[in-house]
Length: 278
Length: 83
Image (cartoon, rainbow over all chains, first blue to last red; front, side, top):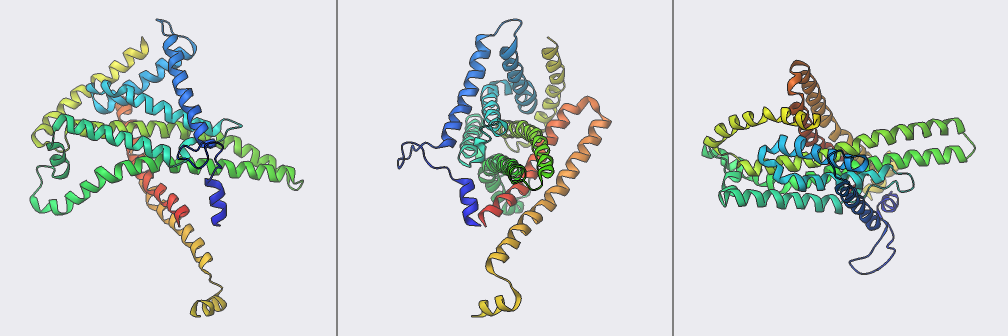
């Protein structure tokens, strides 16, 4: 039992063995994903024009989607400042995940804990930095002791808030991406192995064709999971940044801020449709 | 000695119990998350059907709730590998 799991999780180092910079297949694929992200936007930027075509159009639409539908919708008008960070995260995760369904590679880099963990830590640093920059030390005070609560509640509330905001958030952010991609990867690999052994063993070739069709359907399903996971990671990052910006439980501010938020939220869909129409 | 006697009597081994535990961990973790995700999506569909003009906001919130709940089931999935 242990051995199976071990083989599933470990790749032999290919170069620089024994140093902390050992390179195995995962590291190479990670660079491939980073290169794809870089190339996508560099080519997109080079082809920028008033009538973008091909990759230029794709890059522009993708960036506008993250900017309008994630950054501005979740954070509010000042969210446009965070759009570059969110777009980088979105497309890097998207291309890392996309390697899962590319034949011949079939390996999502995000199904190793290291990559989601680093991305989650980056988001953790960003939202705490934003909170401290905008509210100073009262960021911690408002987070740990939300105002407007009778004081005995703090005995329960403060440990929960401390645990959930500073530990659980980055942890679940990383585990969600990691476990989704790992589950998808294992599922696809199991069905590919089924297909292989059924078709080439000579017994049950019809069954092998059936599992082959199921594998194809699974790849389509996995493409959906890939996009949704990139979207969820980015949306949650934006959500955490928005909470740090607003201040956790600014009591008087929250009513005014809440109604102001609604006023801002209303023009947004029009803004989006304007942009997409143009 | 007691372990051996138990094994002989019931056929239960540590490995077998661990395998049962793994199955139970993921199965039980999935129950709550399944109910929660079902609630999230059914209510989001209702909200979108009643007020199609706010569908964008509803969809964002729906995915947020879905992701937060899903994390619990996935922690169960990861635990099966750790066990």
